[in-house]
Image (cartoon, rainbow, N blue to C red; front, top):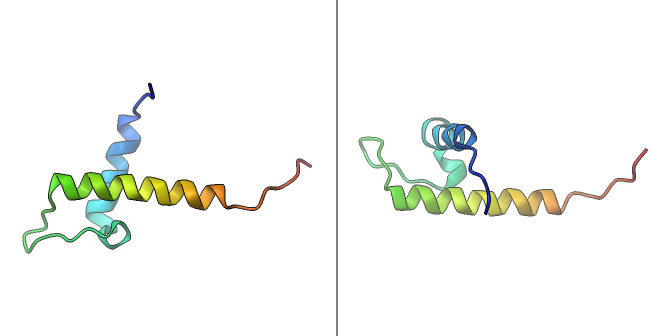
Length: 63
């Protein structure tokens, strides 16, 4: 079971909704709202994407 960092989650949600909805492929309505379902899917997909980017970084030898 993983522990949820609610502070980090809150910051990511704020970033996604306020500053960069396009990075999460969120489509806000004319009043600036998005469905919770769409937000959860976007956060999950972004997490997978970030994990893949990190996994694909070249491995560096310890110096």
